[in-house]
Length: 159
Image (cartoon, rainbow, N blue to C red):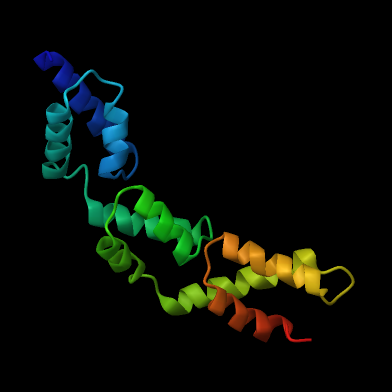
């Protein structure tokens, strides 16, 4: 590979990482557009880490916070997404450990309340509507036991 191509790819990746927080796997995929050897791709990733453009802990923190607050994802869905990006279970658990449990519980309550309002036809939820709310919360990656706890408090599910 020509030296100019390496430099061009490095500059493009600096710009790519400056725009938004990125992880190594995203950068490696993006480098696939360039005709670089695997060693050159790894060298670019190393340089980006040394220069502060890539930082796994920073990425994990931003990712977890963003998915929780903006996308309203639960811990399970966040965990699966991070695994797909190639992070280890220890890194993922450390990042998930930064979530304020009170804030998380409040989000679950709020989402259940919102779904209850959307699904309720004429006041109380039918059993089928209750099941839909639970499935919707589980699809967002929230833990069943937590959903059940707040769903029971909010809706008195055992009726």
